[in-house]
Length: 160
Image (tube, rainbow, N blue to C red; front, side):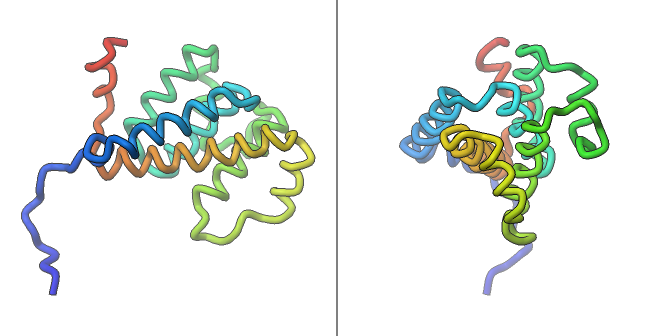
């Protein structure tokens, strides 16, 4: 029987402990970044999934990246309530709806109507890139949360 009252252990750095996995994640991220998916939509996806998953490290990093790319404070502040805001384009709203559906996949499948509208709106490669963007940030969120990656730790390494 497993003892659920174990002494907390230092976090395992799974990203470093399986370097091939870390490299594969970076290649996947690079493939999405090099795709026709807009950088604006990509960052909105990254931030929204990170909000849902409670990944403070990814939230901080992607908030910073979005601001550097010209995203406004107002749109970032309203992102959790994007459905009630007129500040997001049709494409952004579809991407955010897909992000929520895929991130919360345990709640049920992606609605068929949502998938159909996204496929009508985005070309095939952009739609695929959007799905990969959602899947990738969800994987990064989980790696960061499991590894107890703290906000600001990237700045300490990169100086930015």
